Image 1 (cartoon, protein in one colour):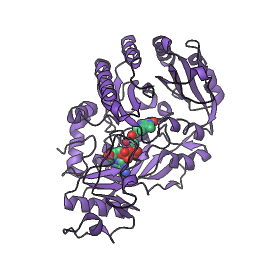
Image 2 (cartoon, helix red, strand yellow; image 1 turned 45 degrees about the horizontal axis):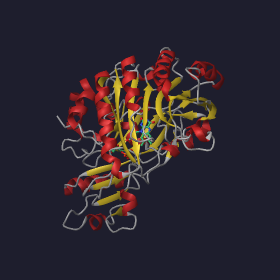
Image 3 (tube, rainbow, N blue to C red; image 1 turned 90 degrees about the vertical axis):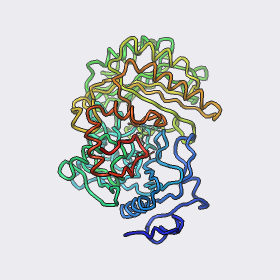
Image 4 (tube, rainbow, N blue to C red; image 1 turned 30 degrees about the vertical axis):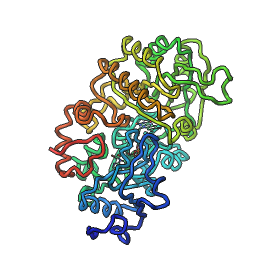
Length: 465
Ligand SMILES: Cc1cc2nc3c(=O)[nH]c(=O)nc-3n(C[C@H](O)[C@H](O)[C@H](O)COP(=O)(O)OP(=O)(O)OC[C@H]3O[C@@H](n4cnc5c(N)ncnc54)[C@H](O)[C@@H]3O)c2cc1C
């Protein structure tokens, strides 16, 4: 369907052409619909199209292209850079497209483009099945899945992109295609790491694995004064860990919860956390050395229902706080990298800021750099600086802290960042090139084929060749 692109305002021009809703300034839901998870983002789109189905997506994309309106695509709205909304443009809002269904084969799950991980887990975990997704259940599937996707079971099952079997995509001109190993294989390659550059994904088909219902979860808090020793001990202990074990070492503050003694609440600590994606008793045995790296302040490890574990971090990442996160991959977790990480972490301007090193490798590293758009996977360690605060007056201080930390860690890095934690997209082209490395030229050619006008550009943008 072609929409009249006359001088009518966007909401009026779109009326009658959509099954879903059109939300424009003045609409009672406008402010709620334009807000995203990061409270720093305050953008005012010309119109928000809350799509009901893929046909609506096609109408919205065509309409925006014909009018020359910038397009933002909203999956779960969780990206720290806030690219799910834009000023003066059109938002393709998928938040009403959240259906999840198991494929009749039982091997995969079909997930609509606006679903969150909570939507997926609600369907899969009761069956003792899971795909690799985010560790906070309110995060959107789409953004996470298109730029990698690291989960609690990442070393056993790979990244989310490694489990993408097919995708239904609305392209820049509004055409709908399926991408898989057999259909549009170049697009299928690009979607696995290339972010939102190639079209709007209205449905993902993701591979399922046996998991749970019970898993062993690791969560030990040690004194922050022991941080360097604990992180080095963790690194050495997991060097040859089985793939079932995915862990992280981090510096954070203990939460203000009644399960903790009053004197520990709010105290900075070094933590070792993670999950064993296998038999819980075996997990407890394998994790034992990680619980003795120093004298713990508190050890909250133990068996848990996987579905509940997936929601256990949700309260610590509420919508509306101010967030500026940046991540990079390390060549190795050397003593010097640990020293820098610990020294910088001790100076966190906000108690809510989390500094986390994720152990990657395992199944992630067994996929070749050119097999998916994501690029090189040889790094075993991802350092992420998750700055989090609440006072707008502290924006400058927290952003400057994160950037200085990132710069100090850069000499230890492979040159790749992780695009699901993109800061505010400030380094543009340079980061895109260094992160995609050898794959960048090929991505540009695929972009030229599927989005030659760069309609989808509010992202880590790949310029068409
Ligand atoms: C609290 C929290 C926890 C997180 N935990 C993890 C984690 O465990 N593992 C991990 O890997 N990452 C994690 N992330 C990062 C997360 O992967 C990114 O923030 C991701 O962008 C979120 O996806 P979304 O759909 O909610 O994003 P949105 O903000 O909705 O979208 C981000 C971008 O993705 C693209 N996009 C979104 N939907 C579509 C679509 N349907 N089709 C095409 N393009 C689309 C667009 O370019 C859009 O600008 C976490 C983030 C937060 C805030």
